[in-house]
Image (cartoon, rainbow, N blue to C red; front, side):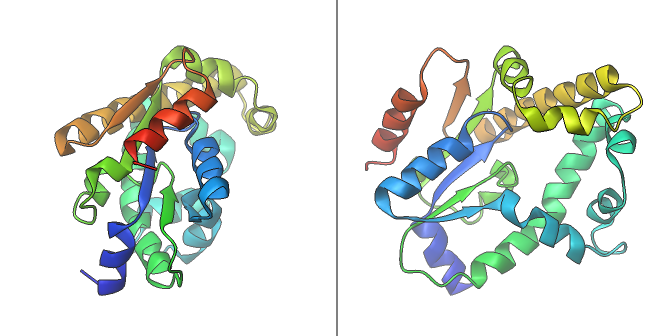
Length: 210
């Protein structure tokens, strides 16, 4: 392993898991409180997609050319298969970003792109890793409150079916993350709304020994 990556991962705090689980909120709060460097994978998504080549990153390249209607008209099972391939294709781009990262501070790595099976070879401190997965009820409630969702669905011929495919895809993704995390022995938090954000943050700080 690259020496810089080895050092970075040895002191990193990693938040993976499903969308709408509170990963970003907790990571941002942790970064602000402790002054850690925050690498949010979603912030680099457009750049990574622009770098994709049809022969090397076929799924990423394909999705870079698709509109929302074409994407969300697919079955949840196809969407999941493509999402898993997409994160595998993107991960070398993420590692390239991290190789260029110049900081002596501990780093927070956050995003659905940090799949358990992808980070396993790099992460020695399992207590510094957490995967957050929402229940379907929590996911549906909070997704429906996000205003940008409507602008995406308005581009789909059948918004109701598109939303159903989207939510089912995310639920299947959460199940796969749980399976991988359990196989790798990584901690998992299931988000059901019974614990507020501040208490969740306190629990994670305790796990991270901060």
